[in-house]
Image (cartoon, rainbow, N blue to C red; front, side, top):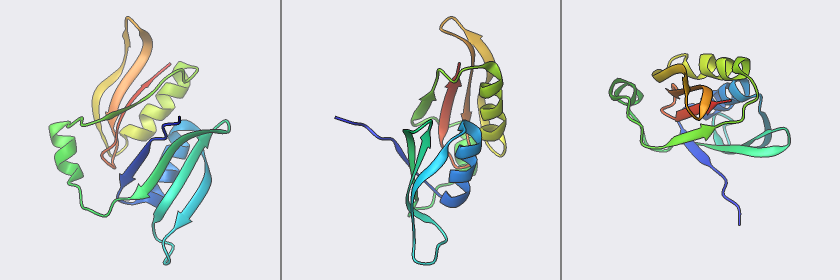
Length: 128
């Protein structure tokens, strides 16, 4: 059995580029709509392993409200990222236009982690 995570966001083309930059991912499969303006389905991989699928959200989402309320409905945990520098890069990319829940800090189970809701409304917990 496999479990592959997918997010539905507005501005899916931009979101894919953002996640590639944040996590060092690459687009390994893309299917755009007929106009080429959004992804019907897109898959990202890191080091050859499937990481995340993205699709264009059909229904609107009030991202400003999500950020204001710091509404965490589901969090994607990305850990064993390798170094503090890699966590910081992802934090900087994901927090640009987003809402920071927890700045980079230390916990008993992680010496470097943070929680951010990105500008697409997706919540991320990132850690070494």
